[in-house]
Picture 1 (cartoon, rainbow, N blue to C red):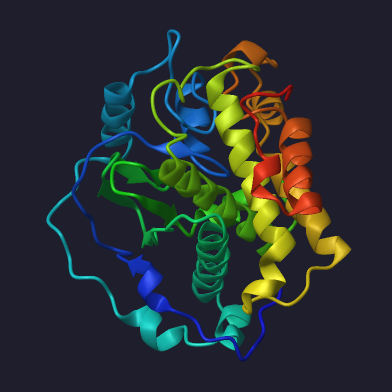
Picture 2: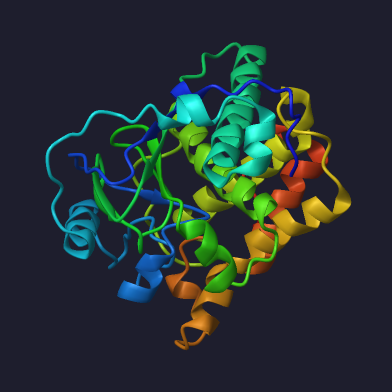
Length: 301
């Protein structure tokens, strides 16, 4: 995806604590991310907790702390992004500015969508960290990948994961794959504001609530992509870029990840949905551009 070079970026929507650690506790909702949990645990693909015999919220919080180590004291937020990332031209030139631009665009869309439906959208910050960081959902690490944390209402991402999308999971879309990840995680924030997240989100299985929750976030990502150019940040998407987004969604399907890690495909352990399902629901959102079409809870998935 390409940014309008004249677009003005709002760095206040991102906290940059790369090299620092913060303190917190809770349960993480994974999405296009939390992929390292698959490799480390084998029982919770892409994170997202577990029910029906899977890990509890406390288990996941403990796990995150064991993976990354306990957080230290709070460090003042960096002002680097505010000076380095001012325009769409900066977003076209730098990865961190690009992610900031996606955050701005996604939230601009959802602000307008909430107003149109008579609701109020609450901005959520994305936090850039490196190495490890203690969050409202326990301590996150590079291996855990990007996730939305309902405990603090923020999206957490180590930008090193963007390389993992290509090298470990085979996504070929570059910047468009990155946009998909951010839009998916903000889909979880939208769910949080609408009261969709909560009890039962960790139920595993191909028809479980966890899969349905994740597929709705994929659909919401597609809805944003449908309207991305309207936000004033991103130039109109090409067919090739949409294909890249679909490729990214497929790359993090439960079935494909299970095949990559050599454990065999086991739909009963799924938490995010198959590659085909993730592509399908992103497409539903993109083609219709209507959040109301993203009801994955009361329909066949």
